[in-house]
Length: 239
Picture 1 (cartoon, rainbow, N blue to C red):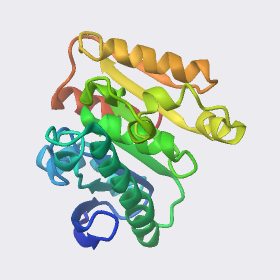
Picture 2: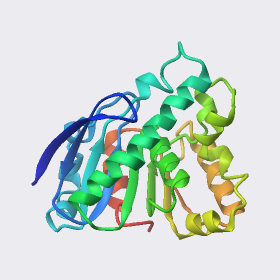
Picture 3: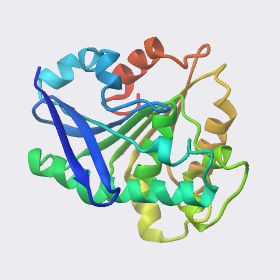
């Protein structure tokens, strides 16, 4: 299996960022780590092997991305607005640096944003902020209201990072049409503490005419053995 490591100094973030790449062709899958994980996390958990046939056949190429969670949402010493601003800089890194890098290496136009736990929020945030760039969102055991990290505080920066809120107030027909063309999968365990947030997020999307596949699995399911099964089930789209 092809495996590559890449890094560069990000102008958007003012720091070095790393990425692992698996596979040689296919849909470009951006993989976000869980809380305070790294770009090595999915490899350490043998997830490329879980998707080995998809990678070997050139159906997908995985780009396991780095994060700045410790400088944004998990930086509790910072004002919530400053945490959100750092996330928006990360968004610039993803859209202006990382995605063009992936496109240069792999011209496949189809982009998937994938993540589990906190990574599911990051996948949904990128995909719904930029529906023209992301064609499928796969969130596994996610929680999608970022105000959970701000004590309920919101301002224009927090709002811009919160798909749970901004989807409700989106009225632009072009953006709503772009959302509706996305394939959105929200997979979560029925006993996961985030189940009600997933149900409400799914409802808010449907209320705006944005179809999505809320898939509730039996049990808690907030762990890697379940995410292995979920990603196998949904990597090609909702069932």
